[in-house]
Length: 310
Image 1: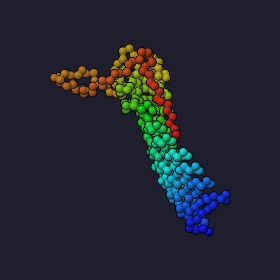
Image 2: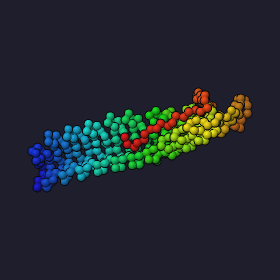
Image 3: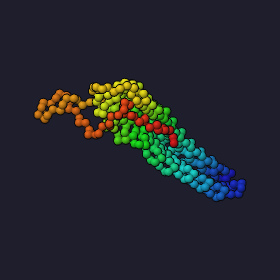
Image 4: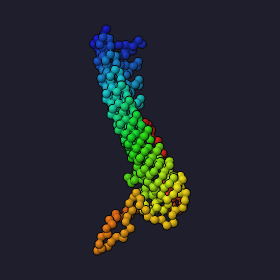
């Protein structure tokens, strides 16, 4: 049996392997060739299998993998490429699967995911990016699906922060406008407002407080005026439409957003009122009141696909 350096020829006559041998088995450093003389693998061997460090190539000569091996499988740190030579993954491997920390890439070279993997699936904490490089999700994963808590970013710049279950926005959470102003705070299901919650205008004033179904106001709820201080309708809703008439003589009511005190601002020389001086209302144009009886319309939360792996 051959031990030391040598060559092995395929039965069709071409050189298949050149390198080290140990008792007839490929061992040490060696190179594997294809029928056209192209290099298919170059690196280290043990017992006829890729071992330690080496590079694997396609029949066309494209680099497919460079990194560490054990028993002929990717084990340890390495880089995986597709047939076109694009980097697909760099990070840790265990028995040929992504395992531990790593980064996955889109075909255009942009980062797709960075975080932890278990048996090739996203797990623990990680970030998912869209193909254009925009951050899509930052949070926890379970077997390749969004889970527990995280942040989801829509393409329009608005985002959600809260609970996830089985790859869907579900549970308690908050929806923010793209400038960071709170838009909705409450219950969710399947990526939409579902259950009890509060809806806010872009200027921060309370618009609606009550029940939602599939992203629309539905059930019992209160509509507030453009300052968010006064209830102008308290009753039933059906798919974002009021089932009654607004109160012709609305009265101020305490709301989740504290209303300024009605006490007139004292003059500089007057004795301060025991009521704390309210913060001045921001000089932002309020959203106009709707002309019909439907109340301000709420656009459903974007029904965005939340697949764990693109």
